[in-house]
Length: 109
Image (cartoon, rainbow, N blue to C red; front, side, top):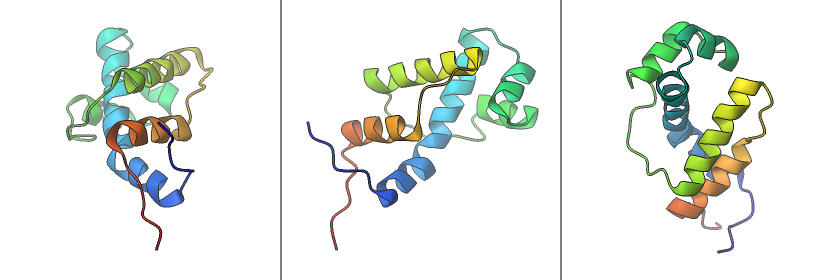
């Protein structure tokens, strides 16, 4: 499937509507599945300990999103990058994956 070229409005929509849920998923995986303390996750991600707690309780990043196998792989790569400090996941990677699954496109004016 050919994805549309990068478009700032599409990326903005992904950042606003999907990234908070993906960050919550990432935080939960790091704490629950990988056994990393909330304090360490906060430090590694450059967010407050309170933000980690809010992601864990879904006060931040609430909402249902479909996590495809491709998106699951991206979240796992992101988690590995947070742990090792050698992140290789970009917003563009996430945006393209979400576009592919959800068919987010902008119509030309």
